[in-house]
Length: 576
Image (cartoon, rainbow, N blue to C red; front, top):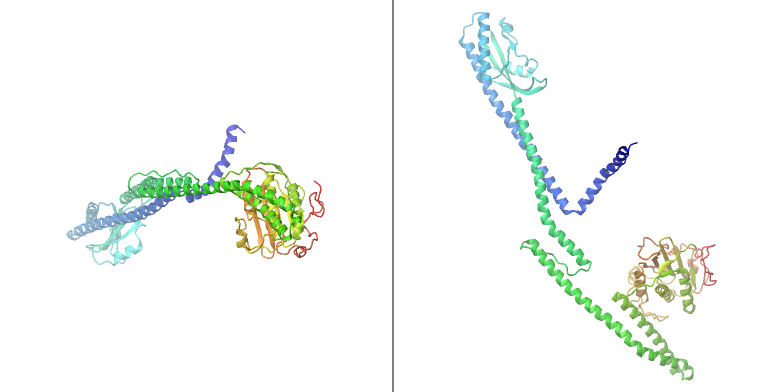
């Protein structure tokens, strides 16, 4: 195959695919372009109006042409009939030869009066005169054209003043047919009897005139529709352009470019819109700038206060540690006071750290120090750190990690803090039941979930669980000394990684928090390797009932994958 043939074979399917894509592209353009919709609607309605008007005018002109030609034909036919009847009445034909001569004179008078050579003269049926056959004649075009109905009407007519007509198709010189009219009138020939005179008129010239007028109308209508489309395009462009400028300006404002404005020209409605929009933008910029300044002042205040409290807090902490170490030598009340001072000082120090971290997130100064991180090892370390608190609460920490997991680019310090916060929340609300930590991964993401079997939360409570200082039950005492900022900081840490921290919870079914991180920073998340709603959410797994019994530490069925190199429980920690 030649190169040209190969190119043609490749272009054929491409063109076909492009043709097939046109309806979809037009539909997309219809949805997105106001200018395109306006022009299409304007041209469509204009075309409908032009077609309706053109059709009405074409029919009216055709009827008027036919009616005017018919009136002219009837007048000419009447004059021709009268002229022939006058010739017959004024002559005295005593023989057949004189009658034929008289007929030729009448025929010439008919042609002169009617301007038509399509003439037929037939004797009225039912007569016995011998001259009827001799006097009857017809032009070659008329036999077979005159209908029986027309002949019956003419034969029944009383005198030559009555006329009867019929639209017919006359044979043309080109072999086709032309529109025509046959006019019939009764005629009396003295000495010969009653006859029927038929005169045919060809309307081809009127038809040509009508065709020319129709073509002119349709071409003019088409040109008018195209002109309307062009005018509509120009007008819509002039009208839509300011709207497009306003839309672009709104998008820039939404993106943070508060200094952009719409150009103001003239004093029309568009200019009024531009002035109103710019006034609104000025007001928004002023308020946003004021709020940003206030937020900056607030963030600086929180940061400064936190830093300034560090020095007296360190002094109080050192003094409290000295008192706490010697609490056994004090009276019982004084020793208890030293313990409370030590506990609250630690909590105050944690609260200051959390406030400083929150202020960094609010100021946008938080950054990541990423490195390849193994979530299973990180989860093991976090479980080991939280194990003593879990034992005090009566909960058994269990780790489920199927094999085949991948490392992820993450900030180990922040992820470890997320896991600790989730474990602390699960211990606090787990009501002494087991807590299951699951880790899994795929080619694009890694995930960690913390599942507890506590009382759970309603949907409204789940929506607020990441709010700062929010508590589902304000009257409930914190048993592990939380600050109320742990989950909020965890959400900020997950967002900073480009990941997601989600929660599932149901009253009486416990809760499940799931952390999903991309394996490579900057890659968007598409799915998570772990389900958010656990398989045992509503009692499908047989071991759920046992898990929900306080003090029960039976290994749950299906939580660990047999044969997996990383399926472990805290009762027997797996090797790396």
